[in-house]
Length: 164
Image 1 (cartoon, rainbow, N blue to C red):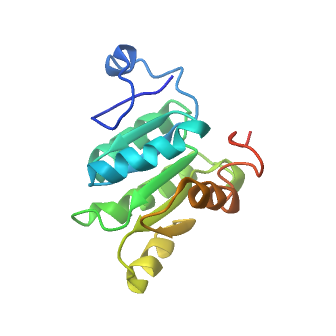
Image 2 (image 1 turned 120 degrees about the horizontal axis):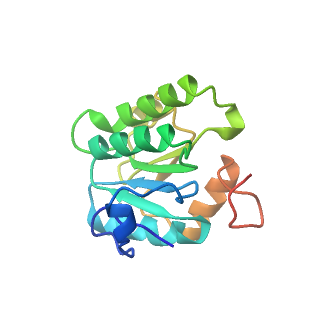
């Protein structure tokens, strides 16, 4: 079953909109201001689990806090490194702080892939300083994304399953 917070090419679930998210296992979050990028990345991630999409970092940070309170930390966050405003990389900082407060071990924490269509080495360095696990240049295909997910430990090699 998939969930939709805003138009993203996913199915809409009334129970989710009513706040019943207890059954949502290890979601993948996509945060990108561009609707086409959100839909494309979301479609690529459908094989590894439920996907929730956000156009900016503020509601994504609120959702991260909610998921952490419910004990349902996201397994993967794909974040556009060039979102408008300073909130984009603060989202990763918030995530890392929530994981630390929860006492999560390294293998339990959310993996973060920052991405951008710009070849800005300073921005890439900032992403890693804020806690990103990886970086991809847009556009990228499903093979590149899945290979990167394996490299950073978000999924197991030879599988589309999330690690346990």
